[in-house]
Length: 332
Image (tube, rainbow, N blue to C red):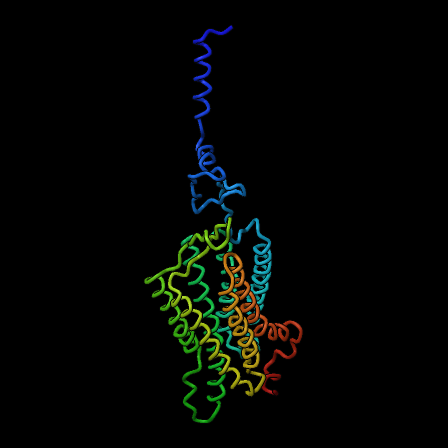
C-alpha cells in the first residue's frame, strides 16, 4: 500500500519526465506528420523520408581520398610530370646539339617549364576548395597557359624571321636573338597578367556553397566572381592559340630541317579543339563534374603540346642520333 502523498509525487515525476525533450525530440514533436506547426530544416540539413527529423547534407567536391576521378587525375598528372621532367633533362643534356639549337633551345626550356607547371596546376583543382585555392586555380592556369602559347607563337614568328634574314641585305638579322625571343614572350604574357590583376581587383573568385542544385547535397565549388573576366582570360588564351595556328600553318612549307611549324600547327589544332569542346561541356555540368571537365582539358591540351612539339625531337635525339648533325640539317 502506498500513501496518497507517494502516489501524487510519483505521478508528478512521470508527468515532468514526459516534458523533458531534447532539441531533436522537440523538433520531431513539432515536425510530426500532419502537424499544424513544422520547423523547416536549415540549408545545411535535409529531412528524412518521414519528414520528422533533419540530417546533415552530403558535401560534394573532388576529394583526394574518396573519389575515383581524383585518383585517375592524380595518376595521369604525376605520369605526365615525370615525362615532362625527363624530356627537360634530355633537352638540357643535349642542348648543344643541332636539333635543339635549331628550334630555339631557350624557348624550348621555357615552354617545357610552363607545361610542367600546367600539370602541377591540376593539384589546385583537387580537394576542398577555399578562397585562396579558388583564386590560384584560375589565375595560375590562365597565366601558365598564356606563357606556353606565347612561346609557341614566338617560335613560329622566329622561324619566319630566320628565313627572311637569310636574304642578302635583309634588316631582319637584328631581330634574331635570345633577347628578342624573351621580349616577345614577356610582351604576350604580360597582357594576360594584366587581365588577371584587373580580375582580382574587381571581383576575385571565392568559395561558394550551393545547397539548392541537388537535393540532399551541398556542392562546395569556386565561383568565378566576374564571369566577364573569366571568359576574357579564356578568350585571350584562345586568341594567342588561333594566331599561333595561322602563322604556323603559313610557315609549314619552309625547309623541314629548321622548321617545326608543322608540329606547331598540329599541336595548336589539338589545343584549340580541346578548349572549344570544353566550354559547352563546362557550362552544362555542375559541381565536381564541372571541375573534372576543366582538369581534363588542362591535361589533354598540355599533353598535346608536349607530344606534338617535343616527341619528334626526342625520337631523333634518342633513336636517330646520326640525324642530329649539322650535315644532315644542311643537306635537307
